Length: 221
Image 1 (spheres, one colour):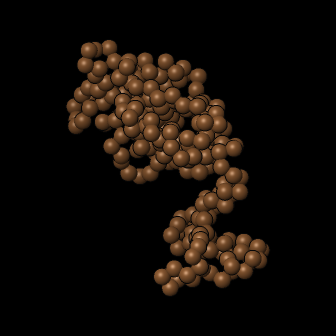
Image 2 (tube, one colour):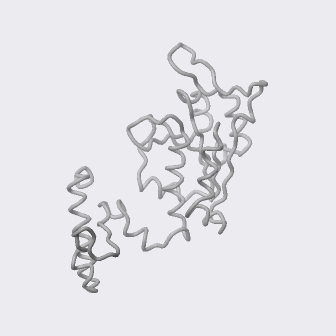
Image 3 (cartoon, helix red, strand yellow):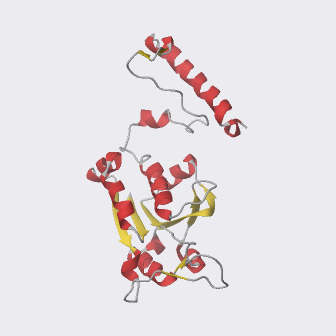
């Protein structure tokens, strides 16, 4: 998968691609990425990328010219282009699976009050929100979407890990335990020490269902 990230703050994004599982995915050529500094496409000597909104109001809006130049430079018109925004479609695991089927993804990281609507009309395929709250910048939201999507690519992590995760079967994941067997007076459930794989699977399914009912009843409904 090829990932293009258009941002005013490359320093916020770059470390993510050189750390942990993503670093290994890049080294194995499962993910290729390019971070584009939108300021490089500003025409004035101050590299201005924002201006006051027409009609008045608080804050500033990202100008269309630098963004259009950055988008054209990565041929965004031919690639699925995503703009994370609080007013977008809600992001979930199923949506992540859909995006994981793409060979190219372009992310526009908004800032300030947002971006000029004409950029959305001309270039954006998906307006996505990661939750009903507002972030100070699109970099965090873009990385959250990228992290959810790339780990679904074949070869990034094991198929077994994916099939047992929360939301895969409509419920949350079961609790996990590791050594020591007793920690601060709390013992690992006996069933996990039994070696009886079918009983363990049944216990995990039940625990996952119980947690879903307790903390995410909306998923049950």
